[in-house]
Length: 258
Ligand code: SAH
Image (cartoon, rainbow, N blue to C red; front, side, top):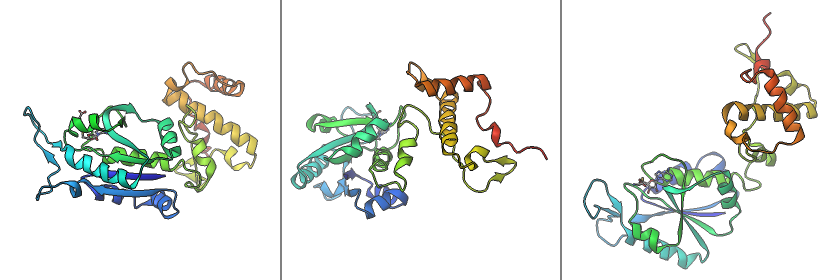
């Protein structure tokens, strides 16, 4: 996957991408990341990439010329580009979008707005897509670009140590993930559910499925609405309802009083 990020704050991107799994993904060649400073494409001596809005009012607007020049330069190098503009006005970015990005063979170009946004003629002049990471407004497109790249990169086979872990995550199906535990077995009076220590793979699989359904039922019931459930899921959901809707799924983690 090749990603180019056009930004006024390149260190923001490079800093975040030099950590943990996304860094390893680059070291191993799964992700090829290029960060471009839009100020390098300005032609005034002060390298100004933003200006006051026509019509007055507060805030600054990112100038169109540096963006057009940066994209032209990139297109000379890379013929097949998909231009993505993070924007609160865009289509909602979901796990499905992350999957599509991770499988796209084109160079993904993230054009990060800042301040009030980018001169509208950039949107009109480039065939670009707008994607939003949620109904709230951030100071810039850098965090959304990082969010989208991160969500896509971890889906590339080989990036996560265990290829199954991405499949189990929340939203791979419209279902939340099951709860996870690690050593020690007991802490502050809370124990790991004994079934996870049983070595019985089928029982563990069933428990995890049930707890994923319980998590979804308790935290995001909208995901279960109008959904055709498998026979097993229906059975597990009935069990959950019999447990009492608000029985905590982790009741079995309470340590027996001694
Ligand atoms: N005036 C604009 C918001 C500008 S915020 C409006 O109301 O639509 C500055 C930049 O931050 C935007 O250009 C965009 O790149 C980014 N941004 C802010 N919130 C975002 C969100 N929810 N999703 C994606 N990008 C966002």
